Image (cartoon, rainbow, N blue to C red; front, side, top):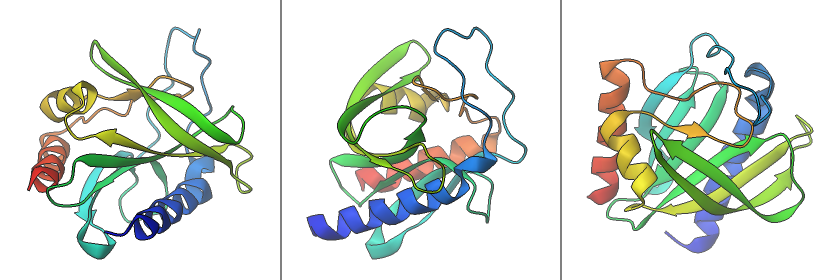
Length: 171
């Protein structure tokens, strides 16, 4: 896929994410000890995206309510990430993800969301990254910055969708 096409796909995903992020739980400070409950209906969903890409989104099925979205091309080396955070500044930044005890910090671009007042986050993660490998194996993943709820797979169907996504990415 041409680089411009990838950024258009990610920008579209960020727009969808921004449009619906007001439906998610309120942010939690990093010092908070207990996460808020998962918003009703949030789950991992696998699907086909534009230009032969696969999408894995944590949100309410068949709605614009999405908390985080990953995408990849077949036999790609990277996974694209689109999410949002409540604080930051425009331009380059970082987002941290964890899966169980494995943590990673990833370079991203932050853009102000006019819809939510927060920040849309767009980045790339190597397909071989340890956090993504742990996520594929366990179904556990959390955004450390200011996510108010875990984004963990809770059902066998969700874990199957996660495995299908990574299987597609590896080709």
